[in-house]
Length: 119
Picture 1 (cartoon, rainbow, N blue to C red):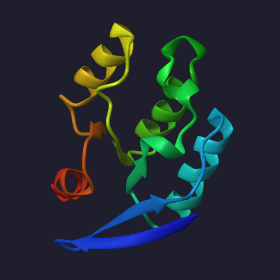
Picture 2 (spheres, helix red, strand yellow; picture 1 turned 90 degrees about the vertical axis):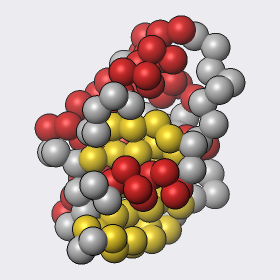
Picture 3 (tube, rainbow, N blue to C red; picture 1 turned 180 degrees about the horizontal axis):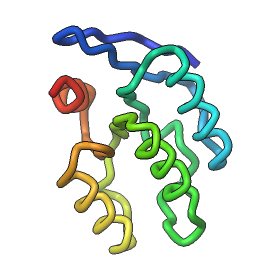
Picture 4 (cartoon, rainbow, N blue to C red; picture 1 turned 135 degrees about the vertical axis):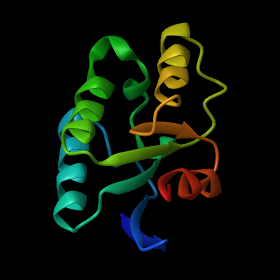
């Protein structure tokens, strides 16, 4: 795992890159969030392909647990990926509602993610 730092308008943003899965459970998500928080980041970009597919099944609660911690710590998060292949309406609705706010967003490119987190 590599954490690349972007600084835009004096805002420090962590872009987390990895070859494989970095979040396979809610504990992994909490550990990542904690590590980044203690490194001074309060805005984070991760890629959907580094998160277990179970995250996108809302019934198991992984997404809720992870995203609640990010909200509690007031840490903004953007998950970058192609979400068009998601089949369940519940996750589509969840993404739609999340994207109305600025705490957690699901976007399609790193450029969109950096723009969203720089504001």
